[in-house]
Length: 326
Image (tube, rainbow, N blue to C red; front, side, top):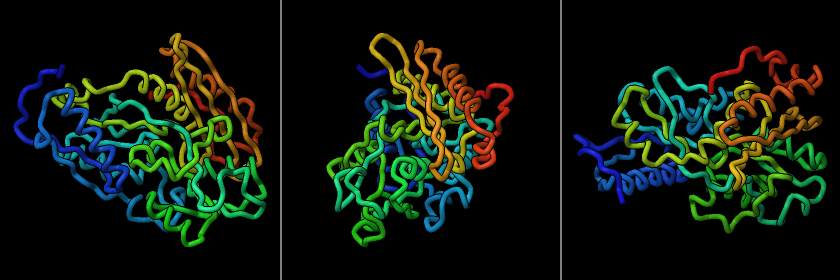
């Protein structure tokens, strides 16, 4: 049964990046909204917005501005009224949104695990010393070097198709992708999932967030019908952990919240030095509604355990002051 909704005076404009994965996520958002409200496809229009992160692919993200590179132009278009909704991979989102914008809707989360992709080997463990692994993710690089300091890590940016082409060209022997993205593209057959005990994923990996203007009542009513509470609870805990750490592309941070059948939430978190020489991990378990408080508490614990050198090399402040608003 669909929810009732008044006729729209014009198509609702959904802003997105132009990659195959971003478009798949925008189409999923549109299709869920169509089903929830009994609307036809022509009630929506997908608007592709090219971001700085899409235009500059030959340098590490940390060298050109960090996570906001994939969102800034889209959020500007939302604030300017050029689009009505923005669809984001939540792992790319800074912890704070611009004034006037809000993310209060998450679609059901896909597989949050990382994926190992190689034309030659079946797993990290099978790779001989000296093998090259391509990655632009500071987190994945630090985690890999921590576990396998005998491997060489090379810079590796681009969409899924670009990375696969680089593997074929011999730039690297293997790379990492997100299982969620491969699933949404129908490409899980090319990869092997990496268990979270071996590689804890990025904060909010696999989650799609829908951003809107805070004062747009029509958009608020539309997205409320497709919001997934379990995903919101999990992402809320993870992003509180990230916010407390003041995480950026200069800081290797990993985290994953999982809901148990009895309403319990388990949160695992990890911070690393960029060179992989130190890895601190911890976890919390409690009521699902206490996720943000658990995230802050776990972050404080890891910060307390970290030596002074950690803060000098990551840029994280040891004194986080008042808890952030997420």
